[in-house]
Length: 79
Image: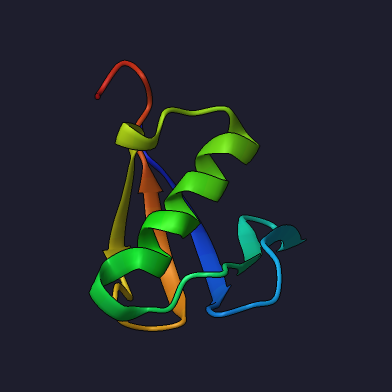
C-alpha cells in the first residue's frame, strides 16, 4: 500500500529543517538549490531520516520542478 506526503519546499534555506504543518503535509527547508534535482534529493533524504524509511521507497510523483511536491512512499511489502 502506498502512502503520500505533500512537501512544501524552501530551497536555498540557511539551514535544513522539517516541520509537520498538517496531516501528511510537511514544510521542508533544504540548503541545496533546485538545479539538477539536488533539492529534490535532499527533500527525500530528510523525509527518509525523519520517517525511518529507506530512501529507495520514496518517489516524487508530482511537482518535481515545483515547490509543492507529492511524494509517494512504498510499503516494504511492495518495494
